[in-house]
Image (cartoon, rainbow, N blue to C red; front, side):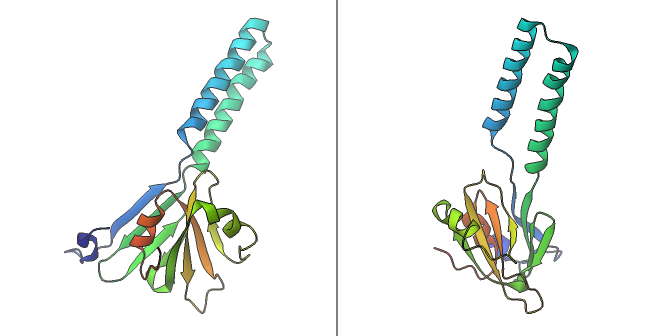
Length: 168
C-alpha cells in the first residue's frame, strides 16, 4: 500500500488496494496432465475399450473444472482514501467500520488457528494449498461472527490494506 492509496481519489470512488485470486498451484495442473498422458498411453498399449477412453477424457475434465472452481476464490480490499472501504472475501463483504483489528497468522500457526482454536461462528475462507492466513477481528455488536480467517498468499499486504492493523 502506498501513500497514494491513502489519499482520496478525485472522484471519491473506492479504489482497489489489494486483490488476489487463490488459484491452485501450477504443479497440480502439471500432475493432472502427466497422469492423463500416462493413463492414455496405457489405454493405447492395452487396446482399451470405449468406456476407458471416456474415463480418460471425462475424469481429467472434471478435475480441471474442480481446479478452476476451487481456485476462483477472490480476496479484495477497496479503500476510499478517507478511512472507509470494504473487504471482499469469497462471496462475503465486510465494511471497514466493522473491523477492530487484523493480524497475520503465519504458516506455523495455521494448523492451530484452523483446529482447536477455531471459533465455530468464525467466517472462514480457507484453501489448504495457501500457506498463510490473516485474521480480521470484528467489532460489530449486531454480528455474531467474532472474526474472519482468510487464506492469502500476501498476508502482510492484505493486513496493511485493512484499517487498524496491529501485526508484527
